[in-house]
Image (cartoon, rainbow, N blue to C red; front, side, top):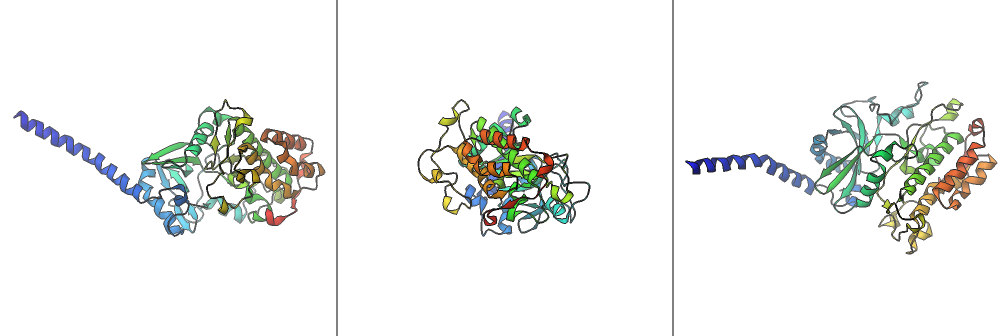
Length: 375
């Protein structure tokens, strides 16, 4: 009799483990169909929307388990809120804004109705409570650990409450097999879209609008450098602006200014916080394949010699400043030489002091550019 009970108990225990075994098997099957490296994830399959959609459809159950639903595909590399048709908007989250109650231009309305992505490393998602966010692939196997370390240091914990910390907070980590995904608040558009030849249609930024953004970008780098983290891809496409101020359209100084957030720490490198600024050096380039890198590269990065990644950040964030002309002599003298200050802190102080000596009304003018092809 006891042997029968033992056998029955064993069978029951075996049956109880079946759902666990099946879940593990299912996860392995899902992972086997997903990209194996970050490079593959950036450009999966035939590089068309079907391949992009397929990998996130596979991750649908994983997102759902952690309380998120992917936004719906609208066309090409564009997504819209789940279940919504034309005119659907993201829900307010304190990070993304449409603009002024004076009315949105068609371009501003389109910007918030549609979420565009450059590559499928990122995905717009909505929580079961209705919060909109962006999910980002951070770690794939052994790749991405530096980015994760930087984000844990800068984008989580008490430091996210500091006003000088412009790193977009990481709300959640999602672990699945050898993948780690980060969830971040949905916010605005790249700073690079708000000026020059790459500006979005309908954008009408004043010198004052842009100087405020540039000042915040320098403050962002000053902060992460103080925490001994270098970004190494600090071009303006990786600074997101909450909304388009468009001061030249309204011809008035805005009361509220959009906050600028620093994102995409894929190439970041972290040093011990006790290490001195001058001892934080590296020899590797930000990307393995720098030949296909579309941004300017200073010679120090390709020299094979140790270089300061903090100085690289400063070169990157100030690169396009040199092409801007404001018709304000004090600014036109300072913008091209900010990189020579040597640190983001010194450049931030120089620009802040220069702007502090100018009347806000004097900045309500349009900038011009020496070399529009390079903007």
